[in-house]
Image (cartoon, rainbow, N blue to C red; front, side, top):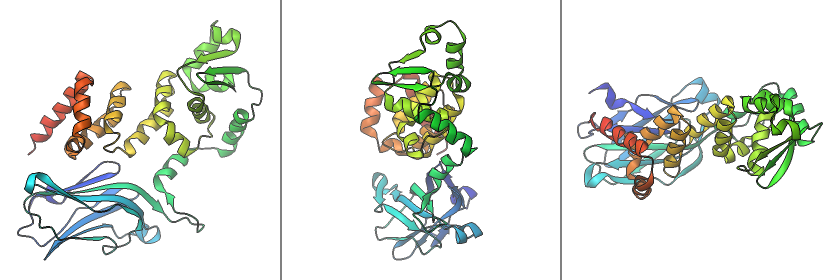
Length: 328
């Protein structure tokens, strides 16, 4: 049996194991695959029913900080035109060993089939005994440094301490500091360094942004944005980061948008990846659609996209399909 028979393909939150045949084998365990902080295994046991297990690899990390997982798992069989069977969504289930999640499947599967696991969240127990903490939420907050200085910058913004520039947006106005804006954005730096209207009048007009989005944008610049606010506005923040040439914000948005690609957002993410030249996000979306077979789950949305989407982007999708099918 080839090594690829045990390999699990992954994206940031999706794992997919392709099995050609179990007719001559009663038990098979995948190679380890990494999602979040843990290495994982899938296994199948064929008896009267098919028993499917998902569990983290035994390690010190698993013993000390077992994952608390929320996920959707399904099996797609090549028989009957790729029939799919989906387990009810699992929410906040702690997984320590291979008996913590067992799915007995009574429906017989023959021929090729695919096991598809989409992780919705991964948490660890709080060391203080509070609510479990999402590892993906932690991943954002740990990027902040020098908390005292950032707190002072945040106070300058929220309390309006010595503001010297007014920003007029589509539905309101807010005060800020030239020096902070200029230090974070070469576009703002240019505005305040030359004899432009913004320098003379001490105002900036940004009619294409709401005050809610612009406040989130400023809070990122001043270092006091909360994780949920960031996630709520990350597409608009990506647009602002591109417009004002704030590369670190653009990269943070890029990385975040790759973490939770799903069938509801993949086409929008693909178009934004193409618009803002986000190569990793574009590649992830194309893999999700084609290699992981999600293109069949969004046929109506895809047909609408094919009618009015960017021609080059449509060609990229078809090229990904052709390249993937070469491997079959």
